[in-house]
Length: 209
Image (cartoon, rainbow, N blue to C red; front, side, top):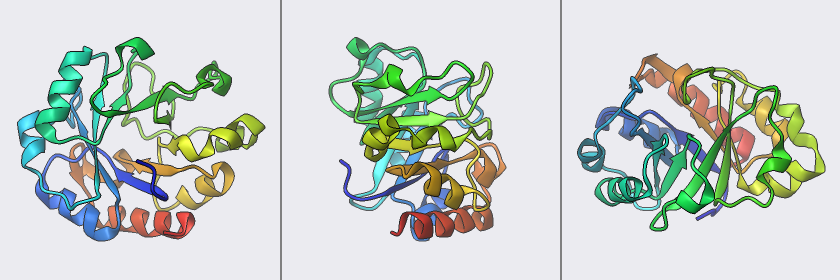
């Protein structure tokens, strides 16, 4: 699945935003299937959003049962399931790639994720009781450690990224990909196309796409 660097725009809820993201250079779009999220989208609605061949379609889930994730992945045509809950590896879906999300807070230890039982590790900022979309960054310098270097091509940076900071984040962490959502919106679930395009341009330059 990893064929070069990845840039994801998450929280897509409509075709207009998806088309603008892809036109701006996004290589992945994310749909949030967590019902308590203001960016929630029904699987059937996500399925109707058209993307080009080769674009990754990623679903965000929080503590969903394996069978449910696999069914939503089938309906929405997902490339990967991004798991933000407390799912153990034994409950990971088998029919779709898995991106495991982890919050980088005071108790975070990257060593807890080696060996990594998923296709990628998405590192998100602290969000209290929320699951993603809080728009908070974390100290990217923690990813300078030798362990981080070994995992770099499986790490996705998320949390508070926009055009103003994505280049620094990439320079410090050298990740496989980056993921933006709340800081490129005009309101939850609706993208600000100017902010989104500025982020995409900055990310493409930083990742040398």
